[in-house]
Each structure stands twice: as structure tokens, then as C-alpha cells.
Length: 129
Image 1 (cartoon, rainbow, N blue to C red):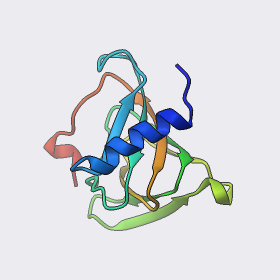
Image 2 (image 1 turned 60 degrees about the vertical axis):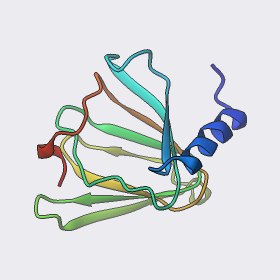
Image 3 (image 1 turned 90 degrees about the horizontal axis):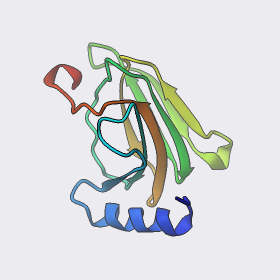
């Protein structure tokens, strides 16, 4: 599969009309795959709860647009903030296992490549801050 502008545009168009203002395009074969690899189209205003992954680290690479990543502690206090923007020679971030975090899309048409260990597990109550 070729990852090109046409594919990014198609996934972005779906994100723009989605209630959640985001859309995944999975590159892994199943939710049970050991590596979860996906494109994630994000529009400004999408809401991703502050969460953690207790069993995997997570990596985001920005293909276009820009994002803000926010790290929190257990008390819901912001402890670090990163802006990832390829136009400023900042391309991605690796989020350690167990780190409370969220992200914000800063531009319309933002697209990230996301990787984490599988299998896919939905958030549990203990993993949302």
C-alpha cells in the first residue's frame, strides 16, 4: 500500500465529517496484531481524554499539520508540553509506557502516523484521568 497525498486526503475528508473530528486508517491486519500501526487524521476541536497505556509505549510521527502533546501527572497537573510541527524540524514524539497524555490538533488536515504494541485494548476507567 502506498501512503500518498490521495490517501491522506481521503482519510482527512472522513475526519472532517466525523462527529469526533478524527479518523483512523489502520495499517495492521487485525486488532489482535502485535504492532498497531495506523494513520490518524485529526481536526482542531477533536477531544481525546487524558489517558495512559499501561502495557505499551506509543509513538506519533506528524506527516502533515501540527499537534500539541500534553503530559500530566496523577493529580491532573500539566507537567510537560510539546508542539510537534515538521515546519519547525520537529517530527514526532515517543510517549513512555504509563505516561498520562493527550493531544490537540493545531491545524486542519493534521495527519499522524501512530505506532503502539498490540493487541488493541480499549481504554478502561483506570486509564482515563
